Length: 256
Image (cartoon, rainbow, N blue to C red):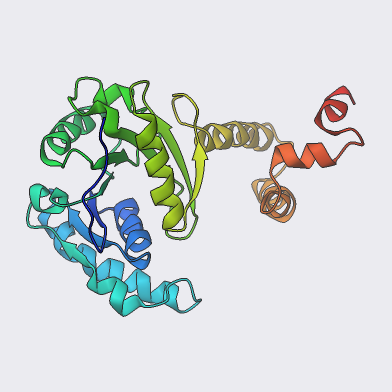
C-alpha cells in the first residue's frame, strides 16, 4: 500500500468532535505548528471551539508550554463541514462519543472523504478499532490513538491497531505523535480499555474495597497514592521500581 502523502509546507490535522478531548488535541497540534480544522455536528459547540482553544494556548504560554500562542491560535479554525475539515488533512483525530453506532457511521464517512494517504485515528478509550473499521475499504489506515485526559497537559498516547492495520500506518502514527511532543505507548494487540485504563481500573477497584470495608479513609488512601506511589511513579514505573528494589532484579523480587 502506498501511504506517501503529497509534499506540503504545513501539515494539516482534522479534529472531529470538539469536546474536551478534541479541543485539547487541537491545542497539541496547533502549538506544534500544524494547521487545525475542526468539525462537530453540534454547530454551537463548533463555533465556540476555536476561542476555547485560543484561551488554552494562552494559558499554557504562561508556564512556558506554548512558545507563540498568537501564531498557534491563527492556525485553528472551524470547518464549514465534515468534508472541509477532512480535505487536505494528513491526519484525522476523531473524538466522538464512545458509542459503537456513532463510530461506525463516522468512520464510514471519514474513509469516504479522506485522501488515501490520510491516517484515521480514534481517541476511543475502550473500544478497539476492529469493532468499527472491519468493513471499511480503507481499514488498513485506521488506528487507535488513545490519549490521557487532557492530552495537552499529559502527553502519553496509546497506539493500537486492528489486526488489519498497516504496519506503516502504525509507524507513521508514532512519528506524528512523537513529533508533536506526545509520549507514545505501543499496544501490541487489541484489548478492551487498552493499558492505562486497565491499570487504573485495578487500582480503583482495590481503593474502593479498602475504603468500603473500613481499612482506611478515602482521604488517607489518596495520601498513599499522591504522596508515595504517585511521587515514585512520576519518574519510575512499577516494573523499573521492582527491578531496582531487589539485589538481582525482578526475578529476585518475585521470589522474595
